Amino acid sequence: MTTLGICDGYDGYLRRLGFAEPPRPTAGALFALQRAHLERIPYENIDIQLGRPPGIDPALSVRRFADGRGGYCFHLNGAFALLLESLGYDVTRHRAGVLDPAGRDRHDVSGDHLALTVRVDGEEYFVDAGLGDGPYEPLPLRAGTYRQGAFTYGLAPLEGDEPGWRYLNDAGPCPVVNFLAAPAATADFEAEHERLSTSEDSGFVRTLALLRRDAHGIDTLRGRVLSRIDPAKGTSERILDTPGEFWSVVGGLFERALDDLTPADREALWDRVSRAHAAWLASRDADRSGV
Image 1 (tube, one colour):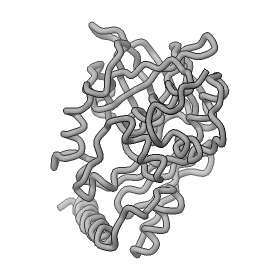
Image 2 (cartoon, one colour):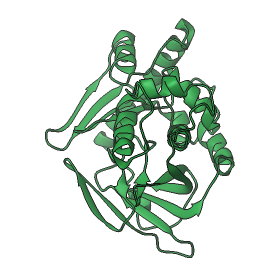
Image 3 (cartoon, helix red, strand yellow):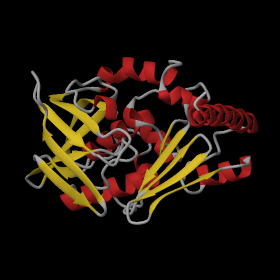
């Protein structure tokens, strides 16, 4: 039995995921919901770049997604957890931490990520719609290696004082996510969200990023650099040279609605990403010349 109606926006959220009616809480529906979420709701930080980061109240994120926006992990997994619970799934939120290659041997949990586990049909799954480049479908919460198309992922128990799990994705820029087994609440992530969305040293503040995942690969826009990661075909990359091309990609490929952005917003964001792009080019050229 579903409990839709907890907050406004569920119908629009489900329609955006391609569901005309609420699905029954089965493993098959869970897989379909995660696939649709990764394909249709982008990982994005446009509002953070414009200096007006949205809060991480899951009900707010549900409404934003119904209106065509995206978000980053606290928004994406927060709203997804609320939606799954409304459909009758047994969901637990977990404090997690994303590690880049330099920190891949650490076993701490920083709290800069919200991870989910879901129990359905007698099985427990690691579910994540908030990594951008994460698994296309849920992974059984058991130690092992899992193949999805041309991508390989791993799960292992987390070493340390507190029980938890370690998610592995060697093909990604951040190959490890550690998460604690203990349940967490939205309030546990508020301080870290404030830091990530406002601090000048945060990657979310420094760099525009949009990501979407499909069965074959990952589309990424960082600043003005559009990339397609497809293990079967290799990685392709191109620079978006004009505002028209940029906004066509944001609204088209990434399916991010643009009706909340004024002409001044668009101009400000294009100027911001262009300045960041120029600085990146200068830094890259300096590295190549050894200066």
